Length: 90
Image (cartoon, rainbow, N blue to C red; front, side, top):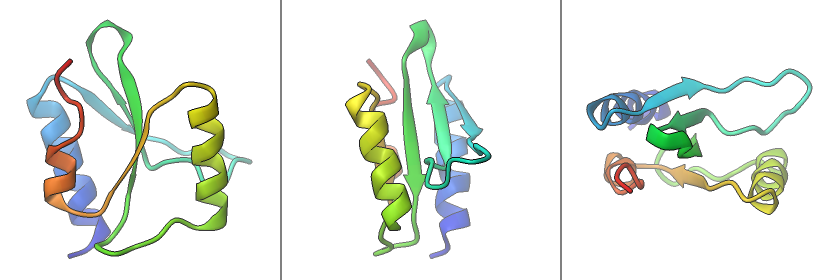
């Protein structure tokens, strides 16, 4: 399965649950997660999508660690099922 299919599924599941899943590109900061998922009441988390069995690059691992140290939730998903288990309800 291609990463693009997982990312498309992420957008669809987010919308079905009333969330926005914006594409995240940050010039000068390689390794940022693919999507910022924003829910109601200011709830948000970051999601990195990978093809099944895909691994993080060193830049991604460092950036994810930086975000987590700042208190943000960062998830890595590599399947449709993993997308379905994200915390869409709080």
